[in-house]
Structures are given as C-alpha cells and as structure tokens.
Length: 260
Image 1 (cartoon, helix red, strand yellow):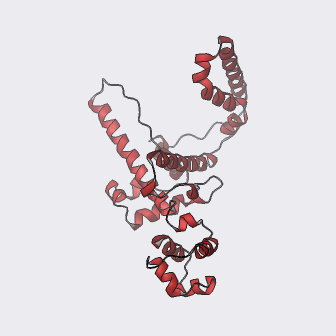
Image 2 (tube, helix red, strand yellow):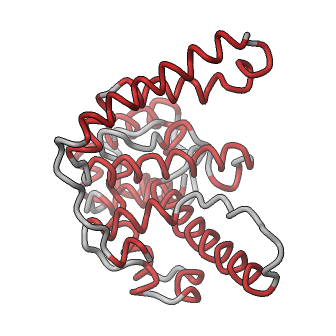
Image 3 (tube, helix red, strand yellow):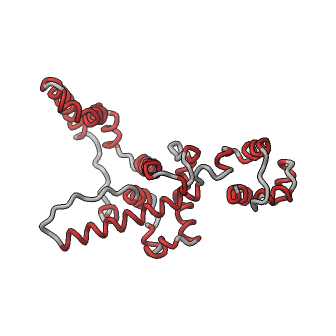
C-alpha cells in the first residue's frame, strides 16, 4: 500500500493538496495512508481504485507493478547474457562435447527490437556490473525503450500477476514469456517484408503449426496415412509458397550488427 499510493500520486504529478481537491480525501489522511500509519476503509480503497484507474489489489501491493516488470526484464536480460557467456566458454574449452544451445528468453528479442529501431543495446550503454546494480539510469533506459509492453496492442496484463515477492517460479516464467512475446511481436511487426507477409498469409504457417502441436500424439497414435496426409499438405503449401517467392523482392541484406 505504502509505495503504490505514493508512486501513483507522484507518477501523475499530484501534490497532497491535489489529492484532497480531486478525491475529497484530506491531505493528512492520504499522507497517513502513504506512510502506513492508517489503512483506508473498503469504500476509500474503491474511491482510490476508480481515481487512479487500477485495481484495489494493485493499490494494496498484491499484484505486480510496472516497475517490478521492468526490473524483471533487466534481470532476465543479464541472466541470458551470462548463460550465453558460460555456454561459449564451455564450447571453447571442451570442443569435443556438442552441447545444445541454451534457451534464451529475453535477450534476442530485446536486441532485435533495439537494432531495428537503431537504439543502442544495453551493453553498449552500460556494463554488466551497472545493469546488476540497477541504478536510476539503467531503470530509465529500460522504461524509456520498453514501456510499450504495458500499453501496446499486445501488452502485459500486470493485474493477473502477484507481486514478485509472492510470485511462484512458474508464474514468474509465465510473465517472462509474456514480456518476451510482447517485444517479439513489436520487432517482427516493424520488420515485415513482402516475403514474410506472403508466408504468413499462406497455409504453410498454419499447417506446420498444427503439425508441430499434434506431432507427439500423431507419431504415436496416428496411422501412417494420417501422418502422410499432414506431411503432404505441408509440402504442397511450401511448394505453393516457393512458386510465389520467385516474384517477390528480396529481403534487405542482414546487417552486421544483427548477425552479431
């Protein structure tokens, strides 16, 4: 409660006098709410919820805040970078062991979005040590460049997640996947080409997705004819896409920084 009421007041550039004028809650009473000296009654919670246009649970600190999501984005990015460094070191030191590449949850989408929009990457602006300390400058960098994840067509619904301190590991992973999806949708939509649009409009995309989703059951319990039917349809779709591909302009050459 303490932080949320103060955060929302300051985010909206309200003084305690403004709060009294706009809500009817006396400035001293609101100050006591902010400092945890007293707690609002249910009807006051509802009034504040309506005023700030957030849920009561959010006001009470029971759901995650946007600041916590931004911090999670930063921390997951760091984790990805360190995982990749460890993986590359292992590859260099033990060349005979063929390890699978690690699953990277955020860093690829973040880097692609920034590169496409010609924004410096986190490690071009800050060191790993700075990112870990998470000073105001780091927070402002993430907020400025990724605040769209809260207000875009595809956004993170913070009201369905508990605060980070109360979040289970599965809930946290689900939130990370949602953040990643929002960012990937943003950079992919900004980088459409005639080839990508043609593919997405074709049946290839749809049929391959269905086959991939059903493949485990299909290859165990489906007949050979059923499996052949799925594969034949995908091949037909891809051949159709291939024939259209010849008449489409080529994609722009991949920039060196994207390759890197």
